Length: 147
Image 1 (spheres, rainbow, N blue to C red):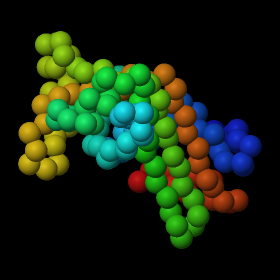
Image 2 (image 1 turned 60 degrees about the vertical axis):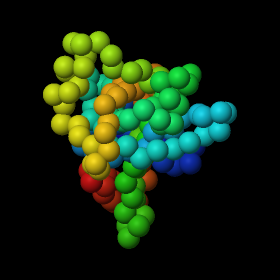
Image 3 (image 1 turned 60 degrees about the horizontal axis):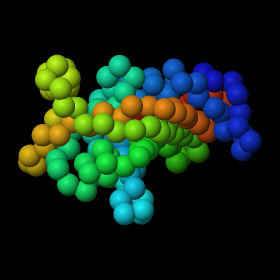
């Protein structure tokens, strides 16, 4: 576990800890800017080579991700009973997966649409900053180690 605390007393997660949380989860939120307004979309995802891969359809989410300057991606968990939780944020740029070799790689990943939608566009979030925080109570360090 990270040992550093931020100015609010939250435990600062190391980048490796952040990636462990990212690899253990598969539902997150993608934040993009559309017409200079923030939009947030729930997405399912997988981690591949320390990048985030999502499958989507053409539309607002896809356009906002790949046409914008940057994106943010977030996952978290909370235990309201014990007042513990964690959050991981990835900031970077999103690029469409287009080359044949890359498409073959991502199509082999365990990433499928949850609904009946026709999703055929893969987007890779290339991280520039990965950060995370954890709330722990004294004596309960790491109470929410995973989901």
